[in-house]
Image: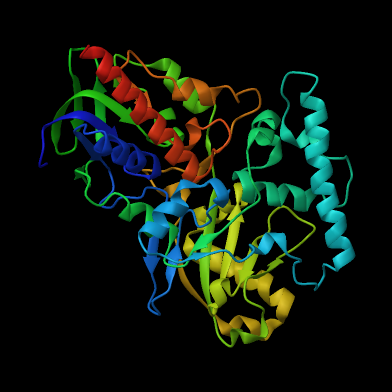
Length: 415
């Protein structure tokens, strides 16, 4: 521990915490990032493989890129923003999934949104699965894609929250890594790494933040911990804040895991093409072939299927992918595959999942989680965003908003 006192403590060094720290630094406010991991970035994490390729084990897409502030950050860092159309906006490979059936599937996805909007216009909330047409042949694939979008099955999520997500339809990526961009944005900020917070005592005039490396005193704090972590930490705050615990429990983290697979003799596939393992079941993966033109496959797993594979370990993901890909491209295809890297976000103790969704009837928990306490406890993170949840730019915007609120409270105090 290098510092025992700061004006604003920022709990969590992910996208929201880094954005808050940058905002406070620019406002001339002393702050300290307190991060449990030995690195910054949180659920944004880039590693570099043996071939020198940057692999995003966490978030990888600049969603709503035309209004995503991380685009400017990446460009200021001199990184390469790739504006190639993402694979899900193009036709999938046609084996077992001809173009006319792909169009049928897309039409049914559109109808899901239409049905949900019509239901919600009448008031209230329902599980998003109620937008499915009973018996429709595409329901399983729709639910599978829903797990890639939200990290859970449609039956577990709020239809209102599902519809509230705001997507401009512009999706770019960073060749050198989105996670690397976010982590580097924290350069120059005071940070205490490898320093889990055990308790935030707000009973006195100053906040007393107890960590694994000692106690830090602060005038105020911005808490950016994932909702799944807050939901399981009833004793994090003293006095307790049950309204925060309950709000977090309404916003569990869904699960989306990525496995990078080396692919020998990859030139037969178009760069950034895609194929589904199966189109008739929920427990399937989506495969991006040759991302950035690289000789590899990025396999994507979501929801309870990803959770079941996590229980079997990383080898379980690779074995499942090999089985699906061999069924598509022939048994000899397996010899061309080698696992490269992945991270099981559900077993990560400082994440406990990938990104938030709201349980049915709990969409309002986002505002409840974001609300400040006593003008000195502020909250940020993707789960606090009303429309940009599940994204790094949602974390950015809420981090900036929390920092601005902390600055305003500080100014009122000194008037």
